[in-house]
Image 1: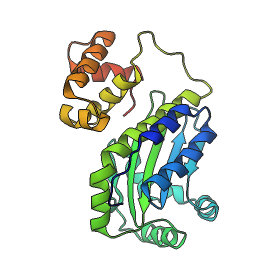
Image 2: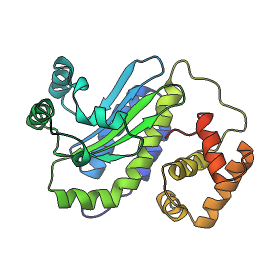
Image 3: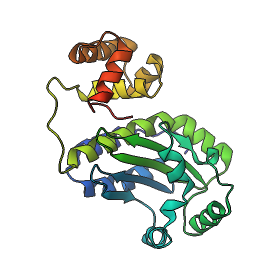
Amino acid sequence: METKVDLDPIIEALVATSALEDLERVTVQLRNTLGVDHVVYHWVDSAGDQYGAATYSDTWIERYADQNYLRIDPVILGCFQRFHPVDWKRLDWSSKAARIFLKDALEHGVGNQGYSIPIRGPNGQFALFTANHTCEDDVWADFMEAYGRDLILIAHYFNRKALEFEANRKPEISRSLSPREVDAMTLLALGYNRAQVAHSLSISEHTLRVYIESARFKLGALNTTHAIATAMSRGLIVV
């Protein structure tokens, strides 16, 4: 994980997916590209049905369901209460149930480090995107410094595709935002400043300004904050 790798092929693979099942293949591709233990995308659609694309072992997935770990998993509980990405070490693992769960997870190949990104859709959808690995804290800190922002962007690409695949998806609103405008507005909504957004999207700040002004015009917004709020209320961006 010392040399940063190009993640553009992952974005291209996500754009090319045509069904929820394809997301499983992309999680494997991303895991291999990053050199981490696991990548997980868990999605609950507007009807309450759940879908998963994960590189965890079948044994762990089955055990997780059999033990009903969903009700005590600190990652699920913590992220459902948050809107921003979280490092697993910042979650509450103090309860006896949480410690038993963690011990079981580690014994089934789940890494000791994790970074999870909660994402909410316009009609009650909830998704969780996670990168997971086994390493020391300093190694994980370096990894997150290199890839944290990229993982947020990729998480939103995963979720955008999942929303497209939803059976009862509503038609696009007229004058919808372009993919680049969605990316820019999403990162701004997450609290990135313009320099950070431009860096994450590998564009100049001038080009970013063009995307933002275009989005404002399409949304009839008075300023960037108004544009973000309008885009979120219409379900054009998901944070």
